Structure formats: C-alpha cells, structure tokens
Length: 85
Image 1 (cartoon, helix red, strand yellow):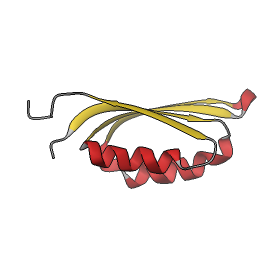
Image 2 (image 1 turned 90 degrees about the horizontal axis):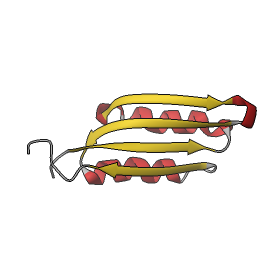
Image 3 (image 1 turned 30 degrees about the vertical axis):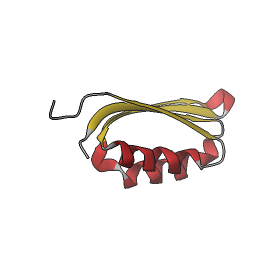
Image 4 (image 1 turned 120 degrees about the vertical axis):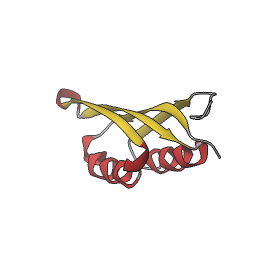
C-alpha cells in the first residue's frame, strides 16, 4: 500500500497519560515528520499535533493504540493522494 501524508491530533485530558502517549508515538517515529505539543498545565491537559507520512493501515495502528490510552482522544486525516502521485 502507498504512503500518504496526513495529520493526527491527540488530546490528553490528563497529563498522567503523557508517558504512554510519548512511548506510543516513539514506536512510530519513522513516519512522524513533524510534531508540536501544547501543554495546558492549568487544566492538566495537552494537545499534540503530528504530521505523518505512512500507509493508512500503519497510521490506523498508531491512532488505535493512542486512542486506547485512558484520557486520550485521537483524530486523523490523510490526503487522498499517495506519496508517488
């Protein structure tokens, strides 16, 4: 399957989930081309934005693992074009 470029948004409702989130993202570091993290310490939450390049299946694996972490919400969007288009 061809790789696609896309975005993954990760919302942490509890900063105690951060170590598990970071460990999961690190396992997929080969497809993460950009990352920004915005903590909100006043509300014990954070938002992470990832730019990814990978197959839909692989991006789905990562987002599924992230979404299974308690207190974490994940949304993703991929381009319709493959990287070779």
